[in-house]
Structure formats: C-alpha cells, structure tokens
Length: 505
Image (cartoon, rainbow, N blue to C red):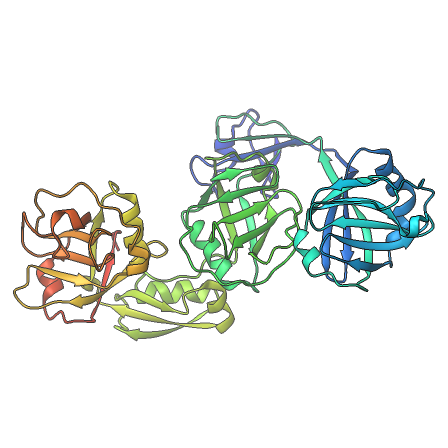
C-alpha cells in the first residue's frame, strides 16, 4: 500500500506500523507523530475585530448584545477612515458616523478597555466609538452602550493621539478543521492506504533574529523539544530561561510563528503558536513552522516532539579540525584554523558561534587544542540549580566543550579556582554540608559566603575545606574531575583557559 511520510510517497506492506513506515526519517525516540486520515476545513468569522490605527493595531472582542450586532451590521463600514476625535485620561473617541441610536442621557459605569457608543451633542448623526482608558462613570448620550472590550494591543491606547486615523477594521477569521488526525507516540499504530504521516516539526529560521534563532537551535540540539506548557494559543518550552537575548525582529505572531521572549518575566521562553496573536515588543521572531502543525496542536505539557530546522545548526565545537572542515564545507562555510591546526586537534572554540552569523559571514575560525587538553568531568544531578549554573558559566549548556578560566593557582595549593559570576551565583542555595571532599571534586561557593559563584577543583582530600577553599556550609559539590589532574596542573597559570567536556570526544 502507499502512504505519504514527511511529504514523500512510500510503498509499505499492508498492515505496516508506524515503526516500519518512519524508518530513516527524522524522529527522536518517544516523540509525537501525526497520522492524517482525512481533512475538511471551515472558515468562520469570529467576534474579534482588528482596529488598525496609525498608532498600531488593537483587537476588539464584541459581546452578544443587540448594540454589538448593530455595530457589526451598520457601523462597521463607517469606521474606516475616521479620526481619533478626542483623547482624555478616561477615553479615546473614534468618529463620527451616523446611527439611529436613541438618546439616553443617563450616567453609567465603564471599566478600563470597555468599547461603547457615544453621541456627540446627544445627536445620533455624530456617533462615536469610545474606548475607556480608565474605569470611570459618565453620560455619553447612548445609554451604557457597551459593545465589547479591547483584548489585544491595549498598549496602543497610550500611543494614540488626536487626529490619528482608523486605517481599517476587519474581522478575524477562525479556521476550524474536521481533519481526522491521530497524534501518538505509539509506534505500533497500524497504517492504512493513503494515510499521511509527519514525524517532526520543521522550522525555517529567521535571518533577522540570529540570537533568537540560535536559542531555538540550542533548545532543539538533542533533536527534540519538550513542551513545558500547552494552551489553546501556543506550546512553550521553558528549559533555558536565565539567558540574555537582545530584542530582534518583531513580527505579528501568526499560526506557526516561533518566538523567543527577550525581556520581562520568562526571558528565554520559546513559544510555538497555534493561533494568531498581536506583535509584542517583548517577543522576537525566531522562525516559522513549515511542517508539523498537527503535532503542535495536539502536544500537551510534558510531551516531546522532534524538531528539524532549516538551516541546521552549524557548530563544529567538539569535532576534530579535519571533521570540522568537512562539516562546515557541507554548510557552505569556509574554515580558518587557529591554535592547534593539525587534523586530529579538537575544536574548542568557534567564532562566530551562532549559526546565522556564521552562514552570513561565509567563514569561521576554529580554535584547536590537543585532544589530551580537553579534560573529562562528570557532573552530579543531586543539585540541579548548581549544576545548571556551572554549565551556563562554562558553556556546556549549549556546546560539547566548555571553558574554565583560572582565577588563582599556586604550586602546593590544595585547590585551583576558576572565575564564576557573582550575580548569577547569588541563587546558589547551600546544600547539606559535606563530611569530606576528595581529590578531583568540583565545587562552587554558595550564597552563604562572599564570592558566591566561584568554581574550584580540590587537589587534596580534606574534611575542613572544599574545592574553593570554603568551609562545608559555604560549599556546593557538583561533580568530579575524572581526567588526569597532574596533566591539568602541569604549567597551569592564572587566567589560563581550561577546556572541559562531559562527552567522549
């Protein structure tokens, strides 16, 4: 029988399962797969209307009152081209346009962001649409006249000035699908003739947001993303929040948009949108989903889904200089070797490191070091906060080879210390005090002591002092240096770089 897998026709045996059908396709174990059986789409008008002004765009959601129906049927067409007539502390008024509303001089209460009718001079030939900027009471001639509320773009009300025009008013459409689709991680699911299968969420990266795109590449570097939250509007991933990401290309967040929060609470959170949302200055566009929306639409918190990006990540760190040359060449990037330039040297640093910047430049420098100068460590997961801090400081959170910069070393000292980050280290809460530390133990100074965030490796066993020279209560142990400590210390000086890895290179 014939099926479609990731857009390609395949012939499989009758009764085949997903496992056999997706062999050779991009897929990470335990991730969701969508199986499309049939599809029928219906587009309907919603109760949401975009008000496009010279200051920006707002969305008004109508209520179910007769006045809202009046606005939709008669006043809607009169709104385009009208001006902002007044802007006060309490209201913004758009108009005027004629209606057949009856005059009502009573005083009524309005909540912030209420949208309501008003009659200028108590004359329905000069009707206005008003938006409450603050909660207040007033007599506007059309009774209470509330027809809806501003739900999106509320910040626009602070930017609108008298004379700004309404450029357009348009209803937002809702596309509902009667698509018969199954989303599952059960690879024993049996297929039938004509089924269409998607194994991954494919994302085209945004060239205008190189750092946001790199953040997406880091989050998906394991081949998949795990959903931290799923709502009717988006799926988000909060796996990497303590990051610094500049504001980049701002765009309306359409269905399929992928955005990264660049400021405020949750900086670094990744959003993959299921529904259209207004642009936000706190969100930079990182890319657009080109395949796999059904997977996103059904993903729940805790689910994982395979991610394929275009372009793929172009990071050669951890490869040999020779393997890095081939890898970069395939991406269309010229390699310039520095440091140890021999073929079997390990690439410890790449500049530029970000994929979009490397592709734009067309070449990168790869700094090589001898293989025996990349030292193995093993981290414990007993204290996730401290281990996360260590990976952040060294770069191991986003690449296979990290860097420690020597802060202080001296012959005969029982430890060697490395620079940390005092600001980020302020959240290193004390662990259970150690009874004894051994040669090779890696530790941090916690918030109970000055210089929190300092990193150290113990060179001699001790019951009194940890890897950074602190007493037990000021020390958080995070792992072990499992390589040759004598080779590490041979000729080591202050401000030297030490390269470390958790992998077998």
